[in-house]
Image (tube, rainbow, N blue to C red; front, side):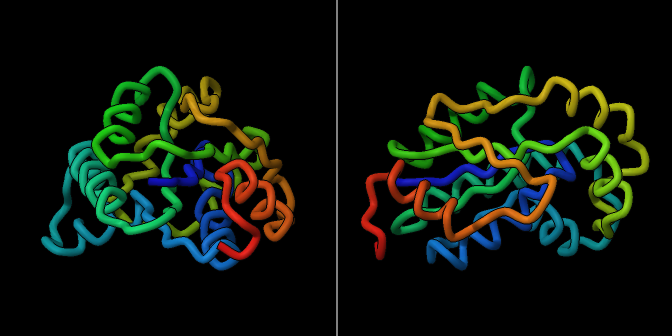
Length: 175
């Protein structure tokens, strides 16, 4: 199983980049926040963000394992918090060839995006500002796979990045 892991701090442009890569590569995207929001919408009552987030992560890895072919997995895996969980998910999903795309952005730009973007209430962003700051300052790529660092301060040349990712994954230009 082949995967592209799109990682970076909240507000770094992961979702935008993953969506662009999906169109360029033709791979499906499995995004933790999309799953988290859908799960929250099922019950329509306030849920503890960490608990529903853990459930969304489990569902994410299960879906990754069900996909037949390469997949883009988009989430924030926090340095110092998520390494073991990430490795278990990779193993459980059967990912053996992958590349991590790290969305590099200044703390200031990410904070501005984080504060300005519309978000589902399940994320409880307004209550998590201090946690965001700590996680953002410590954040680094998390995987043992090759890592491509992408500056997401400005628009990314997605077609060029897709060519690079195909090469890292050992895929032909039209796979």
